[in-house]
Length: 503
Ligand SMILES: [Zn+2]
Image 1 (cartoon, rainbow, N blue to C red):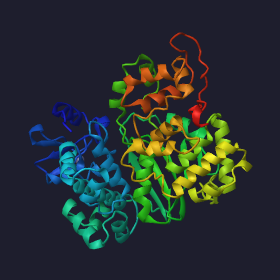
Image 2 (image 1 turned 90 degrees about the vertical axis):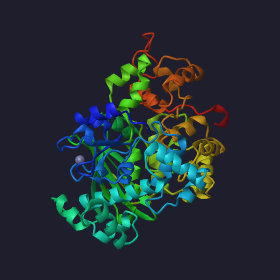
Image 3 (image 1 turned 90 degrees about the horizontal axis):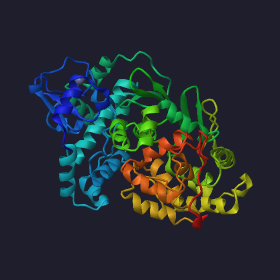
């Protein structure tokens, strides 16, 4: 990744939060590396080095700043200007839950040589894969020290160090302080209840939180998800344990405030990574909208609703089931069906207000009689066939190294067509260029007649077509170019018809 030094310098001097996480500054006089927003007095330009990632600054021998806390910066917008292989490798490193990742394994899964992978990483991120993984472990450990009251041995395990001795040594080497000294600096005011954790996850402003909730609210599965009072909460199930989390906007800090209730601290990294993906916290909206602005309709919409993100999901399987339920019916109708499905097949889990169940596992839906909840035979069979494929490992949502082959496999399930696949790619795989072009709401929002016309126009929106889709859906039916109010004139899009040959 080539950093534009002039841009970096301007962003640093103005402490521009839109650049947070896009580069880091190593200050040679102090030996410390900082985020562009660091409140410490600005260093002289001649003493500054710029790095594309925290791992690169760390490899160059700089220590993380204790004031601006690089571990709190929004994620690196990895897909920006980096080749697919690097993005996919980063995804695999994140999914591995911080366990030691061998470079050979990683390279083999990606189908490239390990020397080639190393070269790609160094060229684009300024650091080797193992340095990137090690920096993530350290950053997460630092976050747990600062933001939780977990014991040091729990922090060591939860951040993937395996044993306390290695953890102590790594923290001491990086921060020049012991974990206990660092915790004293953090001065936590409140001690949360048992198994409860509170995190602040930063984003690069602007962030359209209302737009995010407006999308999630009508789609919230009754019993599993609740949107109210400006916050989102949901039940979760991991490795046989149940819990929940809630997310709200922290206006002051360009952050989301996340409260997690979960009995196993070793799952925290995974949970936090999922929340980050679900709320699209790594997105670099300013850069994305720069390329969408060429389209006057999108420019107008982006101006009216700055900071719109693509909502991801907690769980790919659940999201795909939800998408299948929504084929050919309204969002409201699909939400009602989802609520019935959860009551009939989910596991009762009375947690926070409004949360009564966790979403059913693939093995349960694979055998469930879903006609009783009001599904057509065909739709019920699609869900069962999809659930069987996931249960039997034919379709896996983890460790995806190549989206196209994943989507092809998904479309082999009778009743899943390209609309569902693209929608899943958009929300479960976080593919920024996924685009459900068969969606009638999208075409109508632009006053276009059909899919072909929409696809042609959408070519200019690559590689950010998922964001364009969000803009088109979010505005419902403003007047089209021709001044005619389109049939999509409703705030919530009707989930469209999937490709007919399958349905
Ligand atoms: Zn700093």
